Amino acid sequence: TSLVIQLPEMVLDMKDDTSTYSLHLTAQPGTLGRTTNVRVKLPPDQMFVRASMPPTSLDGNLVTFEIPLREDTDISVVMRSVGDAVTK
Image (cartoon, rainbow, N blue to C red; front, side, top):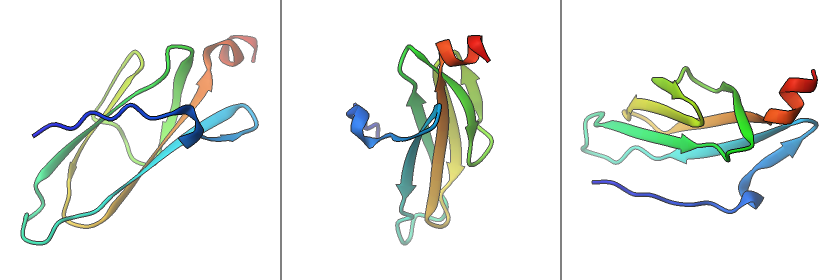
């Protein structure tokens, strides 16, 4: 099963020179920690800075997590404008 959601920019928490996208995943009773794949595609003008857990892969602007969802889990991805990274 796959679900793709394109989110509006207003879901980003913007502070100083970074933006943060946060997602709360709820574990479903009886699933026994089924592996959940989460892919966050950063906007083309943004670069990955850090995440609340190590990503499984980082390929350009695509950040991927594979999570054995045994309990509710929060994921945050912090990004910065590519232009800001060049000037700092």
